[in-house]
Length: 153
Image 1 (tube, rainbow, N blue to C red):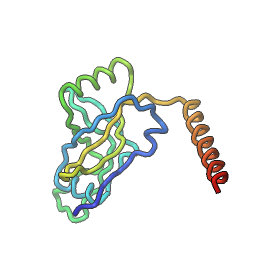
Image 2: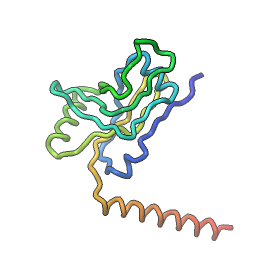
Image 3: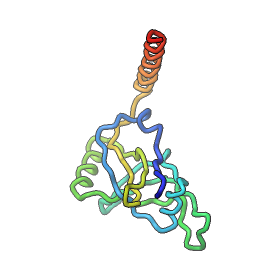
Image 4: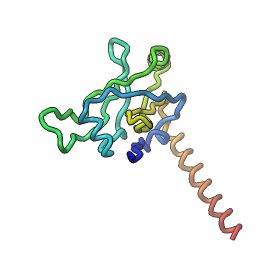
């Protein structure tokens, strides 16, 4: 039985307003998937972009080198190709080019067959006042929960 791997991008929901989400496969080499199975990956500073051929790549995703790898080991910050349907790729590319949105990874996980998948989102960057609003809402909710808990006891 394999353990669940779920590597999250915690700042994504704070820094961006998420519009639409997709699940994409990733093209990985042997040592990359072994490192991911050991939870030696980070997507906190990564983003996605299209190349000239219309293929989607995740950039700046950190996958640490595999400890038992030889000279076949991979580069830690290499660009990795994402696998989506052609229609999804066309829709995403059109949205990114026309409206200035960005594509960010939300979490990296292994599905039930052991394949690495990446949840990505079409997102719009938040302004500073939006972030302040998010913090204020979170604080108000926390205070309300405290009052409810003390009232019930």
